[in-house]
Length: 212
Image (cartoon, rainbow, N blue to C red):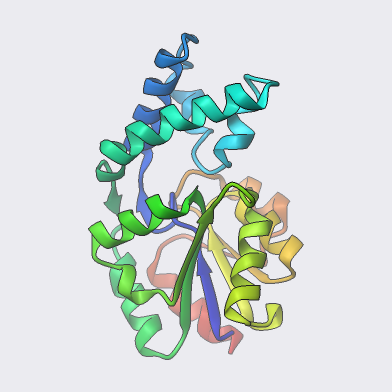
């Protein structure tokens, strides 16, 4: 397995504070009742288009909500993040071992790049792929990475914390590894058909080596 795609939120970083604050800001500014924190937490992972379509049927209203969210996130939320323990060491070891690393995230692509630069880990990745107006579903983001980087699905693994990552990987025809330190549950990862499950970053090295 030469190519490894990483989800961002809940996989490489704990971005829950910034995302929840951005949703709170958004609901306040569009004059909707702010959901409780438990419900807001379930919005970490899915595309914003999917989340706000539960509240609006009009595309203009969805786009307005997304603009509010990204305004807060760009100015403040992107800095309310921390890397999970052991992530940078794991990335360094994989990179030094010759694996090609990429990020495939539902986060807005410019924001994902900015976050990785702020954290100082962007140099580990050969490419960073995120949500754009013409692609925001996980499978589409993964397929864009495979196509642009000219890498075969049969030699590619995705690592992520929610069923969106696993289902997206399955649609793209790649191997899937679910991790349990993020925002999803092991039960959901198993139900989605994850090929492997890991419980801490240090396990990823051994799991990947078994595939080669």
